[in-house]
Image 1 (tube, rainbow, N blue to C red):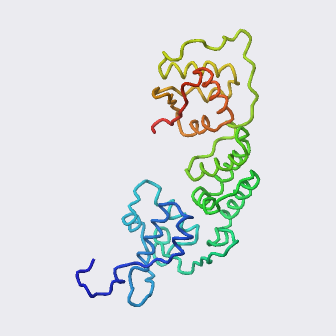
Image 2 (cartoon, rainbow, N blue to C red):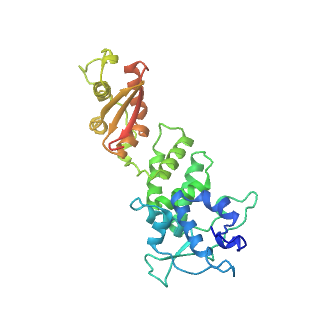
Length: 305
């Protein structure tokens, strides 16, 4: 802050219009909002006396320094989100691959009662607009009421292909009620979780236990370690499903048991996601519940978490 008490106080501030807080901020990820704030600071935070925006380009180095975003790939993703939303432009006067300018021609319509959020924000580019409409259509197909700002964010952050793949996955999540299917798909997109292969979710009848199969375990599970308890669960599950599905369980292991929770480690995030929400998730939990008489619950983590 200046030490001169009578200097113009507005020269030390970047004024941001309320519409950016009310309509734009909720539609962006936290990293993309940081990027947009830097663009506003660099553009409007300069020539305050004349009220002009200074049309200077903003480099990747400036964005990295001023946002504090250090995670590999995160800054590029945030910049693409702002460009796809129409808030930033690649600056052709600088380096067209790494320099950006605030899109001063961007228009944001004022809030109008009864008008959907999709009409309040700048249009997406054609490929993303189609994905946006497809995700909204999937929500309505599932009987869910979508938050359009979140749908837009999910589309911009993941791209059209990932949205289409997750919609296909959502349609075969028959173990969930329709509205819950849309909720799960939207949550996974917002979390950046890669879509599951349909082969991991395709409906499949449970097999009858083969002739001569061992009866359900009667061992006292209270004396078992985490690894032993999960192995006992796998022995039960092995008799209830085809080998093509059981192979996804083979690389899992019980790693911790305490406070009434068994933690099972999956080799990667994709397998963990399948264990949580896949076609056989309910069978797994019901089998475990019967084995432990409901005294222990299951928790799945991916290796490295």
